[in-house]
Amino acid sequence: MPRELTGRHVLLITLGAFGIIIAVNVFMAVKAVGTFPGLEVKNSYVASQRFDRDRNAQEALNWTVTPDYDGREMVLVIRDGQGNPAPVSTLEVTVGRPTHVRDDQRPEFTYSGGLFRAPLVLAPGQWNIHLTATAPDGTVFRQRIDHYNGNRVQ
Image (cartoon, rainbow, N blue to C red; front, side, top):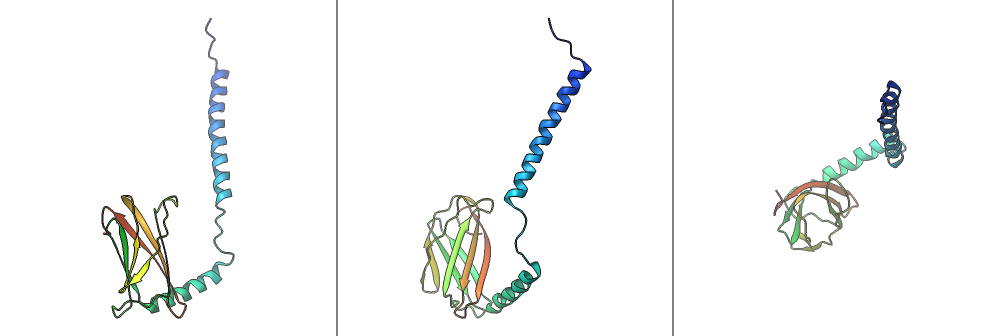
């Protein structure tokens, strides 16, 4: 014999469905807040002062970075304001996807003839080049370069 569907049954089914939805939303919200509390720095005013000072020092260097990628090797040309090779003391580069760190690579660049070269294999798609270079006086130069790998840097 089939059971009769009553108003009480419909109410219980509806409350159960919404209860599951609300429980999942609360769980996801707690996990989101727990994994990223939103605190970047303890004192945002002090951080902003340091940021402005660092930005002004970096702009005074007047460096430009031009990447090139041929499918096997990445070449970075770093020039000063007069178009000469910039006097780079240290160079750190991370090449990675904009959405996750799973494919991040830290190629080892060698310097020769004004060019920084590193062997590198990138899958097709969107990549970011995060570059940190240091001038001889200790000034830090940071730049993110958006890069699409069809075959070459666009």
